Amino acid sequence: MTFINISAIFISKKGLKMSITSTVARNLENLRNSKDLTQDAVAGQLGVSRATYINMESGKSKPNIEQLANLAKIYDVSISELIDTPRNNEKFEQLYLYVLSHFKGGIPKTKLAKILYLADFSWYYDTLESMTGMRYVRRQYGPVADTFFELTESLYDSGKINIEVLDRGAFMISRSASTKPQEDLLSADEKKRVDEICKTWENARTEEIVNFTHAQRPWQACTDGEYIPYSLITQEDPQHVYKPYTN
Image 1: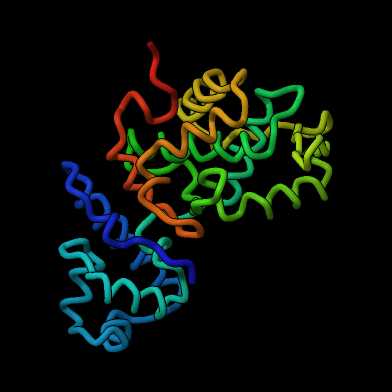
Image 2: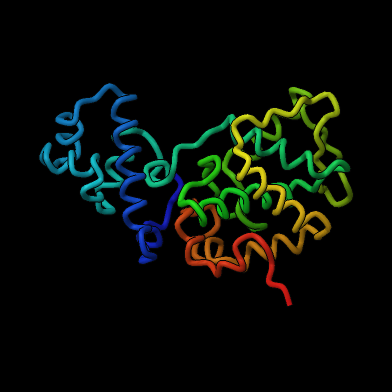
């Protein structure tokens, strides 16, 4: 299981603790139902009373760090999946292809990964929910969704994207001309945000967007290979969430 810095999650921004507690509560209920377990059974495995577990699942209290780790084992998920919104793989694919529609001549793979990150995390900054619920991992060249490489390979194998190998092993990704866009899972406001992000970074070099994400709190607060809690973006300067400072 990938390590996650739990101490960085419960921060003091107004309303955030309540939001995280309610997210955990919703995820606990959904996971328990998917496993067809009773509240009594989970409470027993967790070593707490039924009333204590019910309070966790109803959002009246939040699990401590040890309880989060044990709940993750009970439900066979990562801790990040307990504290973040559920991932939506289909929506992430739509977001991926929607971003590509802004770059007709293609976009470097690393730059694409960063734009997807900025879309999800900037949306969380505004709404306390990400667009897709993807888990992002701290990598050398910035945050990357943990399914990014798998999805890229799948889209290439299915003919939905083209991949061109550039000098020094870089990859340029473009949407295939035959790929019909599907955007029904993206709201108008979400697409507007993606449009703004793509316009902001369309002429920037990959190095620039990498340096931008490196300067943000989410990347700086974590170590390589660690899942990045969405909540860390709420500590960022509002003028530095998805676009660089202007002079």
